[in-house]
Length: 292
Image (cartoon, rainbow, N blue to C red):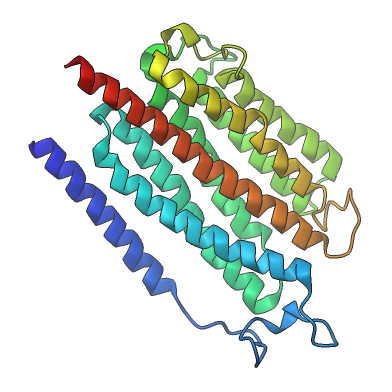
């Protein structure tokens, strides 16, 4: 009973802290605004007509900001409704979307005020949240399902963290124009492949995961997480192709195309990753309760 009360109190304190932090960052936009709509002036062409792609980009930054914040509150609220062994999973889910909400607030501000798509805030977010996503897998399936297999001295967590750093690091080098974009894309893809090999696919065990030791009620969620990694993450290199510094697909407003792809990918993967983990944790909690 004491543990349950402590868990609920912790959740409420974290939600309150997040709400206060978000409120303290709210400020009026400093960029030039349209007098009729109150929207940023750069969303309109010379004839005063709204441009659809910039408007969609602006809209998705807001949707990302609000939906990530709402997901944070939801995951923290649900933390006390799952068994103790799954509360770490809920905390990690909340941290991922909470951190993303802060970064989306600033990316939204940069785009609203200056009409610029920031890759710096984007990669600040990814360098923190992608390794956290790698931690979520073992926290959900349990330590028993994680094997002792090692590659170059790295176990499951080490492979996933190293893969995440390689993927994000080379992605930034390519988008910032520091190195040639195609080698950067291929090297970043190696980091993604490392994570796939470690966690497995919906059809196979991973190098670091033994499916036979994942409980039946968690198997669906484990495979859903794999679907996000194997398929959902493919949206990111598609957005990379439109990056102005990369320009492997040359179109007008390439930065906006890139931002739309990244924003959709983040909303699907970050929130979806948390939702399927929550569903598994809830189902496993019900099974545990029924067996008592």
